[in-house]
Image (cartoon, helix red, strand yellow):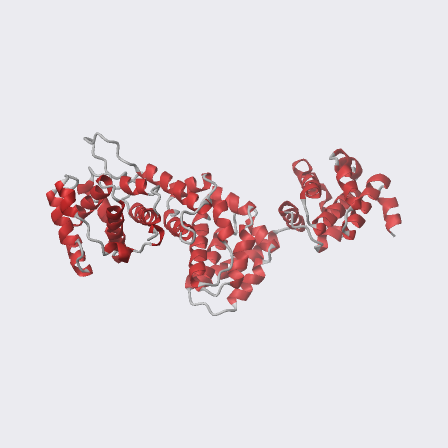
Amino acid sequence: MDVAELTSEQVLRRDIPWETYMATKLISSTSLQLLRRYDHRSQSQREQLLDDDGPAYIRVFVHVLHDILKEETVEYVLALVDEMLAANPKRARLFHDKSLADVDTYEPFLRLLWKANWFIQEKSCKILASIVSVRPKNQNGFVTNGEASNSKKPITTIDDVLTALVKWLCEQLRKPSHPSRGVPTAVNCLSTLLKEPMVRSSFVKADGVKLLVPLISPASTQQSIQLLYETCLCIWLLSYYEPAIEYLATSRSLPRLIDVIKSSTKEKVVRVVALTFKNLLSRGTLGAQMVDLQLLQVVQNLKAQAWSDEDLLEALNYLEEGLRDNIKKLSSFDMYKQEVLLGNLDWSPMHKDPIFWRENITNFEENDFQILRVLITILDTSGDPRALAVACFDLSQFINYHSAGRVIVTNLKAKERVMKLMNHENAEVTKNALLCIQRLFLGAKFASFLQA
């Protein structure tokens, strides 16, 4: 059987030759007794054994995984631990019991992450994520697992664990070990681990955010809805971390999140996306982007639906009020600036509004004519005919309304770019490129006469 398709039920039906392992001194007689007591028992019997002597069982499980290499046995013990944690997630705290201070409980699971066996990888990842998430905190934020000063062998620290886990999870998002379960497993673990400040930092440094963004898309099947929910949960957790917010502001994440919240009928998905928007609304240019993407209309439509979750209702009210305030605060030039910086040029009213150009013409001088430089870059890089046409028109407007417009645009070397577009296949582009060149060569007065 392909180990990638193994189930825990199949693995737990195995009979492991524990006596043979004791005879070869791979386990002690005490370990054998504990394993035989636990092996193939009912759920209630195992619960009682863990209640009575939980740390001792953890010690045995970890030692087996450390000392025995046979895959069938490794799979079996991992399935036992996974089953124990699934039945009662609080059992993960047993790994941090003070009596295990001399045991490196992280090391076997960390090593097994890289085993060429999906069953082993998946179980090790899930178990590690559970253990890490319940580790005891001290005043400095965390304690390492196993801090025995008399230990000759260095103990695996929480830093080692989190760094290795993030590396493995990013690798799964890039090149999954399992075609259908690699990505969902990685996202599921990240949705737990990204609560950790260090994981957020490592994940962003590893360029992990861009691996999540493509997963933000409307879903229909139950499996894909769960993956979407956990992906959005990751984005929500990252929305508390400034370097991640900077990436979200410059990626296609906002339009994708809006598509999801517009089309999803699952309350938990809508809720986590709304809470993400709530976090991002006041950060940098994101509020302006939300206005530009018409999120207010989406929020108003959502408010008209029957939701029961109080956090969701509160978030929708907050967003509606905040977006209205953003619209009031944003001057027409701020909105124009956002449109240009995002490259989303369209024929919105301000482009042809004489009042806009007269009142804001000096604003184009900010940051060494940044907006003009971006408009010229759009001429070089955009494949959208509408954006090219608007960029040409706006350059001609600048020439028209700024006293030194012709000189400035010439010095920025826009002429060559615009002239190339005079032969563009799109009529709208050629028309506005021609207008720009006319104003550049003839001045606004004569160009306007020719246009008339």
